[in-house]
Length: 374
Image 1 (cartoon, rainbow, N blue to C red):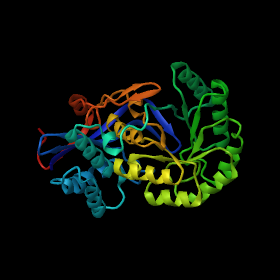
Image 2 (tube, rainbow, N blue to C red):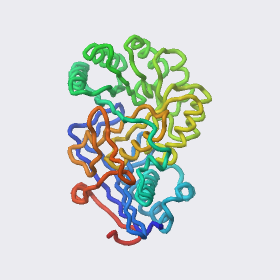
Image 3 (spheres, rainbow, N blue to C red):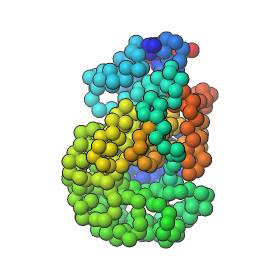
């Protein structure tokens, strides 16, 4: 089986409401949807959601990287040769993990379809019965976040994720405590600062005020790359710490393990380059006694399902936060959510159907490499 052609779609997914995190407000979500076709007529889907604030990739630049470099390079290769495919892409251009993830995900979709197996069966099988996800609340006033948190509990969600870090750490503390008061002591609450508290001192002062709030963890409280600082925050506080933007590669993970800098790591396919590296990182974390989460860059059903397959295959991936499809007012896939669980279909590959008409409607521009798709 050989990859014969590719079609790349630059898409903008409309959101139900703006998505607000510490470093950006998104009125819609730009994404690159990839179709890879093989000589036996199979089509595999992949996705890249670049984030210039985290991986240094920009939407239009990633489109060109895929179009001019990565896609021509993989034409003629067997999608099962995934290590060779990654090695080839790495030899062409360093970094660019989201663009590489698009190719990786499409190859795994093709592998599953060719073998008649869901992707998780290619990675280790079904390690858990259910995959759950939280209700994610973007940054708003303490009162509004508390109100929405209560509504989420009443709607049946089993956990909450609060986005904070927009510049005022004390106001963030008020947001978190307001939500805890509104939902009671038993609702699991995760807090994602997205680097917003920046310095060790600010983070430590804020977290100490939250040590009796019963939080599941606090995610990436300080700037990315400061692994030593993250270790200091962890040593000086009593709330579990999750590393996100700081852990993008296996090298980052090894340094986090060496410095004992986090309790949990957030693996994202867009940060590490796809399913292949995500599973490797989860195995390494397991050897170090660390738990993992598969997180999201707010992706469609394509990359979200890929992340869920990776999570299903590894016992130490205990949480997932791939809720992009729930935030979109229009989507292209049929990944099924019945909160608090997501339901993988068990069909071959990613197990989703992509609606070509919806994809066409949301596409801003597209290109074909290696010929036209059937």
